[in-house]
Image 1 (cartoon, rainbow, N blue to C red):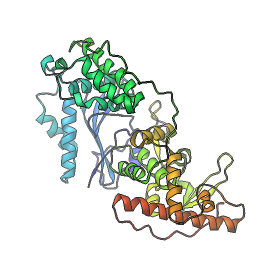
Image 2 (image 1 turned 30 degrees about the vertical axis):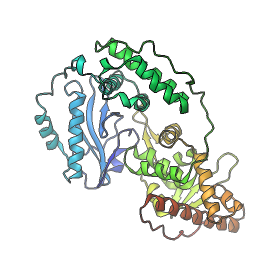
Image 3 (image 1 turned 45 degrees about the vertical axis):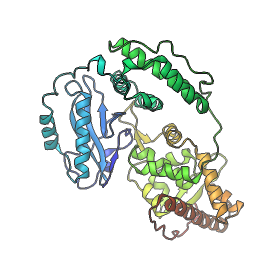
Image 4 (image 1 turned 60 degrees about the horizontal axis):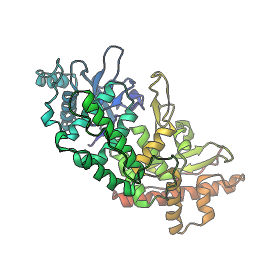
Length: 419
């Protein structure tokens, strides 16, 4: 079984996701946590007096969450090593429990209970510097979204990771940023800002000089102005997004919502606001919205799996400002994640689906009826619902065929008109 890292997951009420065989070491509680940007499976929870480290992964259909120790006694480097060992043991069929944690702590006893000494300046590489910088941001209370954003931007400068900071010059960064600006002007602008921040942090923490103080955005670089026109997605791009949703690298609620958008072409708002009560007998009854009437969508087996839940929401989220409140995963979280992994939008996905269905022989009228009510006449709408099921099955077969996994999409379930 593969490991699914749950780290963004301030999203699920853990008790509803844990399999029946979970023992007492899998804590069925909801806790607001921040994922570690560098080690999948490591989560950090802030407390009133101290923070705590957790191993938090989903494996074999259940959530495994174990307290490792406090951040005042256990350095982040030790927590990462323990989590890496835990993931490796899970892959070998060994399920970590409280006894396993105790043994792991004994193995690192010489490093627990004291602060890890910073390496001498001579061995500070750019990669090490930026990792410590991101750790410091998290300790200072910056949101996981901000830390993730910075980590993603710094990946554009990863060519410098193995180089000693003392061997790098401002001209090295100018040349790389100028090359980035040719095709990605806004990325070059933001990479300049974050690189300067790392340089300032090196100086402020006594680990080096602020050698990028005079770094300026290269010619052609520009701050993003916000909303940008994006071309329609391609089938290959959508298939890659679905792969990412299934590889366990994202929160289950965010990944499930994005995959549902990819397999249906629905708007993000329609997906995140769905409840289990909207799905009955294999048909998703989508409520009216705006000028659009409600309509029914027969589900393929994969969509039935994605939309099967016992919570109040199909894609739940624990709100960090008030952990006692659980609601749907936010529309903004899904849109940002979709743009990050696929550089696209629900509109781009919907356009690609329409193109694939047109190539398969469906008419424009049939395709337009995929995402909205066609008629107030119950018989006509039942026929339209049946066609929606056929189109979803056709599109699902395209996606699964490109992914490379065999699929049995089955028959479209009996159609019931929208109440």
